[in-house]
Image 1 (cartoon, rainbow over the protein chains, first blue to last red):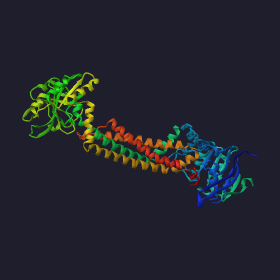
Image 2 (spheres, rainbow over the protein chains, first blue to last red; image 1 turned 30 degrees about the horizontal axis):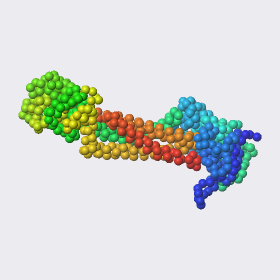
Image 3 (cartoon, rainbow over the protein chains, first blue to last red; image 1 turned 135 degrees about the vertical axis):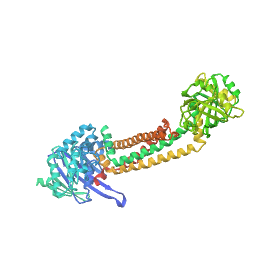
Length: 233
Length: 378
């Protein structure tokens, strides 16, 4: 049995007040393990992104607990929670959120810089990771000079440069064509996943199901089923 | 921390259009603020030119005197009384007044005539040409070579003129620390000759210039002078009195204040708005940094650094531009009175700090309000 990376118990999250109040998560309970790629799928408004935010220490739940490597993260102070995100989590945002005024290497180096790594060392390390994601020679370009797929790789390099235990990817293939999307997730599975890392991916794209370890299906804020991914069939 | 500040620096300066707009706004504001206040400082300095140039440490005058040009004659016994006061090392009379000079070409030119104590020539200017003793020669005058000098037809040693039907001869060309405010040339002669050449009322001593035995004697001299019905002021106090007159009893101070405040508002508007727009445009990026684990205080530090860096760079450029403009203006317009003082620089600096603080306050508020969840939600 692999180690539990994340344990979510009876998490509830609502937005708004009065008649406008909507419940985004209804008593969600799940476990994610190291060494797996866990997909969270479901229609728009089903609560996928809310769940991802709650379990990555970004959005505080109304009820329930989220334990990461055994620690209840929502009992952390705001500073400790920020440190937790910096040291344990890697984020790949749907729109990448790369800084257009920085070079590609500087973008990738950001988590290291936030960890107080010396600037030059951080850039050198970032260049290594750019090489890992196949972007050698692109280090000094601004992200806007790169294609969508390349920008996604930069975002992945930025997410893993700090060697996080948990990697969170929000709709990683939403802006990419089918082949590029598959190539990106395939790359993540082959080069980023390891026994000491858990990868959570929120996606609509069933063309990449082949790379999932498990697939969590959500609807109306509820977890309605867990399937094994194509790799396990 | 150095890495985070470097990140903030790169985010700021690499956005060249915004950074330029920010710098232009602050530079322009600083330029205007310093130009306004330095002009005022220059005017005040010139208004005190006689006080600066004569250099006496204590001045005795009629209590109604408001500016150095607005002299009220004192009787001769005041000089004798002052000389006999405790704490006075020595005291000399000085005459300062206006006159009309008839030049060789027949034109008339207003001048300021300063009559120095015949015995000591206390307060005499530094001579560029001529000999000091020539002032005792018949009809001898020194002329000050300042921006007003050409108004006397660029005189040289031996140039003659008429003053109230008396013949005057230039026997020395002198330099002084500060030019006068009213745009007229200055002539120096002896006290007795000044009284002889210029029609005067009954009382003729404009000021008594005093050298106290020690600086601590000033208060004693003041009390004794007050008992005499006159006023004793230190050099700085007299200059301050002159400044107060121009600042509060003419429209000059209020007009300057209005212009300075307008410059400040212009700078604040341009820079504040541009910086706020800069923060708004980067709001998602700040949110992404927050999601990645940047603490709120680190984001505040980044914004404060960006605002401070912009403000200080703009301040430096504004000061440099203003100094350059003043130098160029003085080359073309010798009468241009602007003078940059520490006071000008300090005031502009405080205003720039306020601009940076206000600009960053609104930026910080927005950045602190952004939720990383909003970044996920898109």
